[in-house]
Image 1: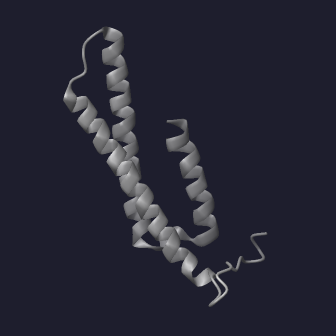
Image 2: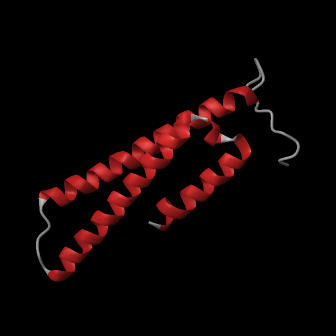
Length: 106
């Protein structure tokens, strides 16, 4: 959960600062989709862990809702990469494929 909720969003913060990802509508879709997936996945992890400690058997709905959380996380990551591709297009020179980085960043 630390990696999914904290480190990934810190990396997104750096990418936002560098490439202004939030100027696109895809960023809002990424942000909400990813966070819904994170909440579902973490919630079902807690539910399943609690049920295991108590000694009851988790049903198939627990796995299904957890799977939905993982699907939302994956969809959020796809949206992030689509947004990143859109933001990076102007930074590539025609023909060379090498990115042009602003000197103020370095």
